Amino acid sequence: MNFSSKLLEKAVDEMSQLPGIGKRTALRLVLHLINRPKSQTLQLANSLEKLVENINFCKNCHNISDSDICEICANTKRNSSIVCVVEDIRDVMAIENTAQFQGHYHVLGGKISPMEGIGPHNLNIESLVEKVKENQIKELIFATSSTIEGDTTNFYIFKQLESLDVTTTTIARGISVGDELEYADEVTLGRSIINRIPFEASLKR
Image (cartoon, rainbow, N blue to C red; front, side, top):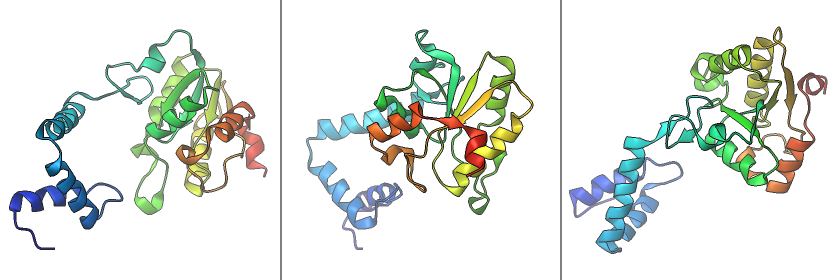
């Protein structure tokens, strides 16, 4: 791809680093930004700069937050004794959209995947175990994706907590095997949370 401008080429190269964005799509997006009113493009650039400079991760659950503690953890009306364990921040958003869960979350930051070089030490598992040991948590709900990696992650955490006094459950398999939570419709996901089952029962299937 030949460029008449080094600035254009650099912008396209950077844009094409985003997931699912190839060179042609990147070029189309960059040209669109150039043709928009300058004030709108600068506003976008300013928003991204502020995002990178000022975004925080909640010290309690690792969710994205504007402050040290996210709005969910800071909400005294929510049940802090029930914690939903998810892989990704997008999963928190998906579950929140169902309006069926009023507990807290714990974002792992991924799932155990030896093929990708991701082990337990790469995830927020240790802080979860410490949270169970120190806090009054009565139930952990595993809401990871219905994949081998997701199931492996659940089982690893389950074994770490086996000697502790906490109930472990998993969302009902209304979610198809191999599916990510963020792509599940709100009704199906909401019912999966409500109809959750003991984690040990899921191991016998």
